Length: 113
Image (cartoon, one colour):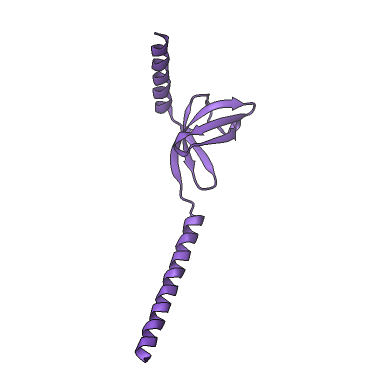
């Protein structure tokens, strides 16, 4: 009987320990500041604000124009760092901008034919 109670106590302690670990893991996931890097395009300007579309996240960010990198224009692509609660524009993505502008130009040309 004593062995059975000791085994049962050990099982209860083990389960309690696992529950504690699971709660700690969930808390870490909720407070994590995991950062990802994505590309976004300046879709348009609305007064003194810029609307940036980030297709990968299916989101749009609205920022004051003065927070954009110098020389930013509509249809320009940007490297953006995004964490759970905030984002930061890292740089202009010149290659992607050129590639996408060329691709759109070719599509428009085909439509006109």
